[in-house]
Image (tube, each protein chain N blue to C red):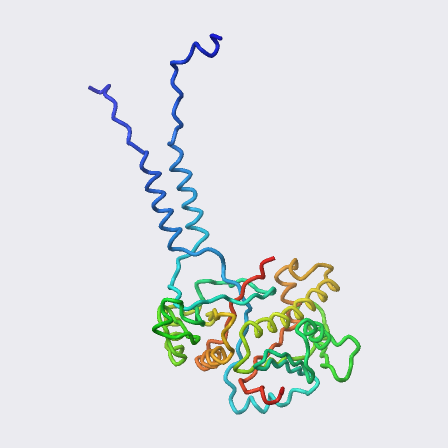
Length: 194
Length: 155
């Protein structure tokens, strides 16, 4: 009696079951991660804050406008998208301490050293008729300018590109080269750029 | 000759399929780990613009999505071809964003709420007017962390 073997379980169908599960997951899930440009919106201003805004020195601000025909205007003249990055870099970096370009303030960065930090602010304005693709393209150029400046800063100070610094060092570089892009209150810029 | 002719009667052993299920299970686990559930069905066509300086979204569970674009083909008869806002599973107007943000915030843990990111997935052909409206509405309900969804340009 005890010599009788119990028959083995038939396992040939587990593969089918697993395939079914696999198909289910393939259909209902998505791959790939979400990428994009992160921004922080300014809070709704109170009456107090508006007074403060006006105190920003003229030389510290560059206005980038995009009109409804997708033409870009930086400062006071029209500019091609390809040259925008260099203009922004020159504006933020101000290598020759030009009095028309933003002033610098020597700031003590905790754990690092005192570095001159540009006070420049990029103000981005758009029209209601601007296309989203152009808007993102301009945003991208602005971010690229800041990223290149950060790279240059980290090469000069650490001898490594920004992407290979430790998290702490990246924090320092971020403080030394801030990304001050302000998305202005919506207004109709079409009239002023025509 | 007997080398080949002699063992004609010997059967070819069948391929063991016992490990097949293991292989499929491994595939299954791979897909379970690397993918995430599709939350909503797209009702608008969205082809996000390209940008070379994109960063990855850090916490996917803390983000909510606002889709903006023209309705998909099968819904165009009903809703027209103007750009619309899609929240969760239905078309909404910009006034509904406030409720949407409030309910999304409610669903999060207390400590995660300040980290909430609103991901704006807008089609590259929409005009900025609708996006400016959305941004103003988000500012009003103080959901200030936003992300413009974009993809890396394909080389």
